Image 1: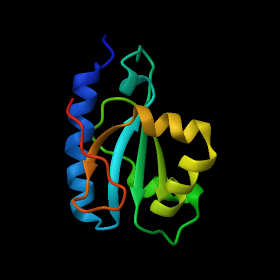
Image 2: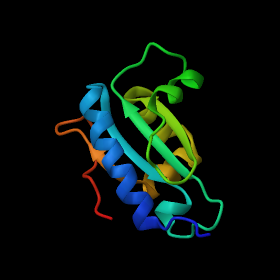
Image 3: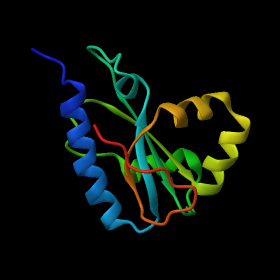
Length: 121
């Protein structure tokens, strides 16, 4: 048995992100942070995924269920923020600032406010 490596996980999440964003115009940015972004993943590591959307009517705790990525070979923890929430968190939460700093953005909608460029693998 083997645990999937970063390249395999990165490829799978990029494929999923392109499809998911094409199906939901609210998607502004999709990225991952944590051990796979830092390169210190190991057996049992999950993928920490952040999705930034223009808006959402659902409460925060229910948003992730609609964004769970199929085809990714590791468990995924999905956090979905509106753009306003994400920007506010950058100002108030050291955890959110750290996550944003280390994030690998695999999808960035062209012209999205405050968008960072998509990063290579």
